[in-house]
Length: 128
Image (cartoon, rainbow, N blue to C red; front, side, top):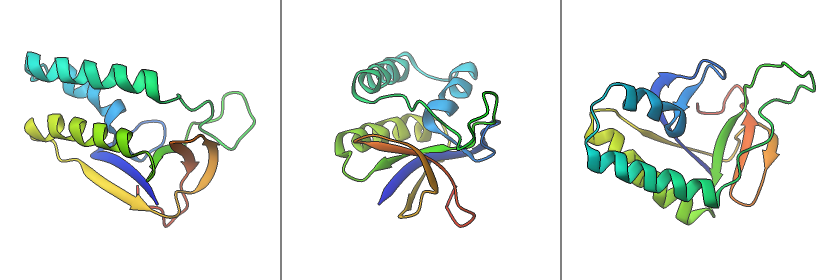
């Protein structure tokens, strides 16, 4: 099983709903976060920087300027990562932004994989 946390806004690159890391900059720019929430975000974000690799590839294309259409999913064994995402979800929802938790066994064509995550170009029936 693969798990993804998304808001309703679309990502300009993938055309799919934004994940929380992409969406956070918009939340921050709205200037509505309390200092406590910013501190929580920074703590969680720094944890991810230390404990999750950034995918090296977001497309099946080998062309150098191909559009990044793959989206990231956590593997269900990434328990600590998923717990941290629920903490981030709370920051969004405290500010009136709904976060949906998507689950699938078919994330799409996998273009990157490590112990905790995959980046995949979604199939037509993949929830995004």
